[in-house]
Figure (tube, helix red, strand yellow):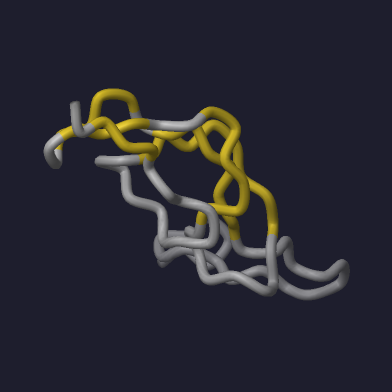
Amino acid sequence: YGVRAIDCQGRPFDPLRHRAVAEEPSEQHKTPTVLRQLQRGYEMNGRVLRPSSVVVSAAPAPAEGTPEKKACGDAQTGH
């Protein structure tokens, strides 16, 4: 029938083929990269039948004591 599993682990996140259900901080992977597959997805003849449910990488949390960048329009600066 041409149904095949979607290969996703270690690949860049693709919202057309993957469904992100969680994020994990990672210094080793670019954001967002599929770290783990929780449920296999399938496609047939180039069309997604069911997207893969995955955990994707996120930027690591800033180290404690490191000042965070402030967004434009910050209330403290009045800009």
